[in-house]
Image 1 (tube, each protein chain N blue to C red):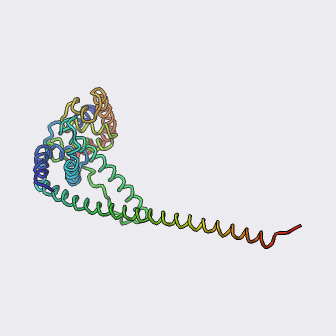
Image 2 (image 1 turned 90 degrees about the vertical axis):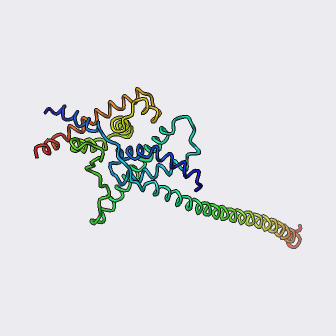
Image 3 (image 1 turned 180 degrees about the horizontal axis):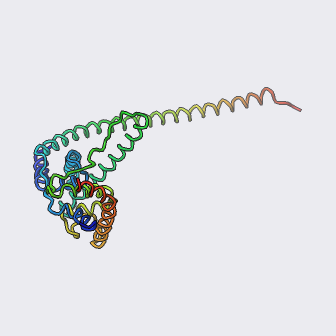
Length: 95
Length: 186
């Protein structure tokens, strides 16, 4: 038998292939997996909820920090002005 | 899980499960892997049935999901094999992950078993699209128009892919021809 003929035969070896039957319990396995997936989906919802709450808390903290910083900056400004004025009053050189 | 969606998925499963399982078997060359991917396909169908638009038939849509799931599974398995190869450098007691080297398809006629083992080995080496087109055409028995619809390609592109797949298979089979002759003599 020539090489070409054999290769052609190999290529045609799937010609009368029969459809294979499935495991009869496969559908039950699928239903079980769908149910389990739903449970997992609920828990992922909880994870997202807790994550968003965490992000919100960080955001609130940041706002508070920025506000406190602004207030302290204002206070610093007034004290520095006061110091300058007092310096001028006390230590100004007169000619 | 409500009873309506439950009965819907049962109907779809009864109609298409054999087709899905056989396509997976043609792709993955392992009964266990084919069962696993078949389960994944129907879980995906269950969750995405609301997204299904009647642009194509349900059968075509399920074919597409199956092909994508099979390709993802092969990719994941290759990644796992690469990792196990890496580990085997450090650990000599590593077990081989890939098992289906000499795959005997349960649907093949007895007189074609030896030849089909060689063919399935050669199919594994084909590029993604050529492999898909060859399996759909020669194992699933779909015509070029149906394949073109599933892959969203033109019929001429499908014909071209089948031609190239055949050429590549001939090349790889001619390399393994000596091995086959030795077996025939035995």
